[in-house]
Amino acid sequence: MGHRTILVIGDNFLDQLGKFQRMEYADPLSQHVLSLEILSKVKTHYEETFNKDEENFLNWVKRMYAVDVLLKGREPDLSGEQKNGWIVLDADGQISSVIDRTIPEGFFDWFEGTLSYWTLYPGAEGVDVNLAGEISAATGFSGSAKKSAIDLASMWEIVDRCCAERWDYVRAACGSQTWEAFDTIQDKYKTDKYNAELYQKTYTEWAEQPAVKAIYAMPCPEESLWKELSRQELHMKNLLWKHLEPYAIDRLRLPRNAYINSYDLGHLLNYSGVIKGGVLLKDPDERALFASLADDTLLTIAYVHS
Image 1 (cartoon, one colour):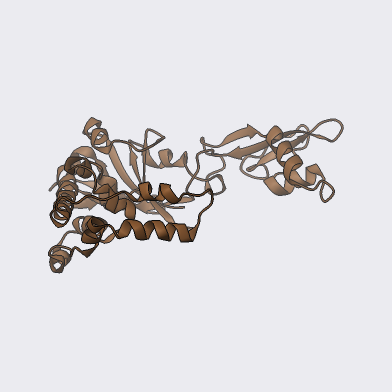
Image 2 (cartoon, rainbow, N blue to C red):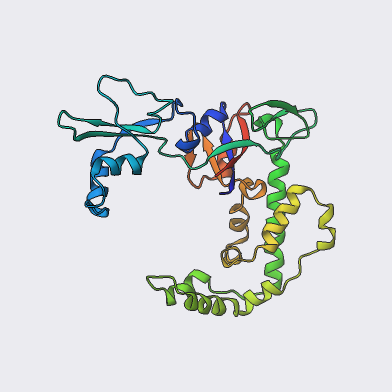
């Protein structure tokens, strides 16, 4: 159990999210629910993994897939007994069909509301949406607003400035020294299965490099003043200076501009997925994505239980 924050681009954001809600929490009559024939898969699963002497095929399917037999001549009750699917028997009482009702791309449980992370221009309005779907107008900050209402330039400025500062301080601390990436060292000790001892050996070898030691020894600049920063800038500073996992340190091996451009609004606003037009985007180039959006595009920061 946990939570995720998702950027949804475009109108009807709740409907877009519905395509990614797990079936057990969705409206069983949702347009995103598919009825799929899975008899072949079910047979294979039963033959390969189950002791047939313990339970017959029909009872096993009922138990494993939470479905029951649909009586001949009846229409499935999609919001009732057949919301998860159903079994069809042939004239001999053998299973001829198993229907599974599912949302194939579902990955979260339910929507909990929007997060007021968008910085709005003075005089501009957005909205906030709560768990019940109730909408309230918002100024200053909002969870959902048109692109034209959001001061995206100021938000990108925070990302770029904080990343540039981090890179510049690291280069000053390391001088001309460079270091070998954690993954490169790990390849020397890689095994088929995870080995805690080898992982520690990798980490120690990586962390003992002079440049890495210099980075770890760096103080956070003007940390005593961080309490005066905006919520967004404070989050970005903490992300860059306090999260010292090897992948974060090794990212600093990039050239300055490449390092800056490797961060985006997802790092600033803490969302971990982007949905646009009902499609879950994979590793989008956010700078190009935001630049391509029309000014009247609705942008929503959705908080979901997962």
